[in-house]
Image 1 (spheres, rainbow, N blue to C red):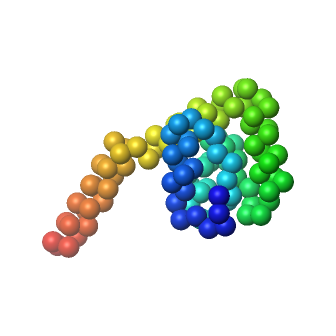
Image 2 (cartoon, rainbow, N blue to C red):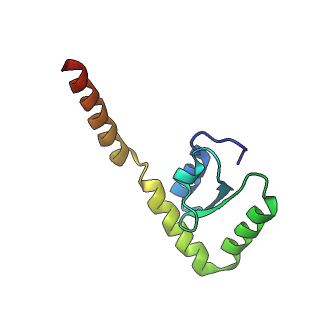
Image 3 (cartoon, rainbow, N blue to C red):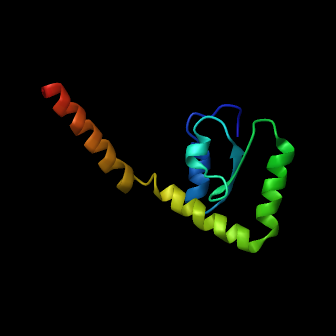
Length: 100
């Protein structure tokens, strides 16, 4: 990932495919990639840490399996069926406030 990431769409797309993510802890990535659940977060520039994290996931089948499951669960939080009703409720609330 880059030094600044507004949301982390690429990470979310990977997680939706059951791929654990190794990313930086910058921008919106910590909201999408939960450290120790869907993958690992490292500080920007810590390439050794990122490589170590990737190897840790890949060398242990149980860790890989746990992170795959965590990645899929985390990605589902952003599924349209879950997100759209929240946006609709938020917009309805704003409309009601403007009417008042």
